[in-house]
Length: 111
Image 1 (cartoon, rainbow, N blue to C red):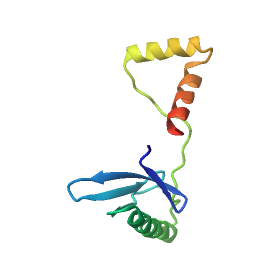
Image 2: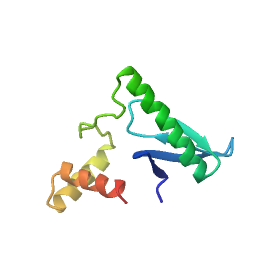
Image 3: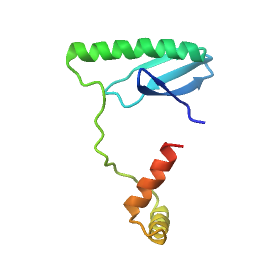
Image 4: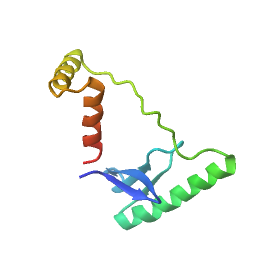
């Protein structure tokens, strides 16, 4: 089960804050912070829509692109033994390490 929801076409990660006994939503993939709180799912949708609307209005007002641009490249730091094991697994699958890791990330992100 993923702790995400789509509001206004944007993905938000949802967590629970036991200190205040509320759910917190935070939009991802935006060029700034846009978060919201609510006690239930209906409230998350309502507060998320309001938060996103304010964020998008402010971006338009200041001429800021609201969405981050992703290049498709990032640096990954892992333990040397994990690097070695992944290289072996990739070779055994007949793939480059890059192809193997990209496929593993794709599977994890979309399930």
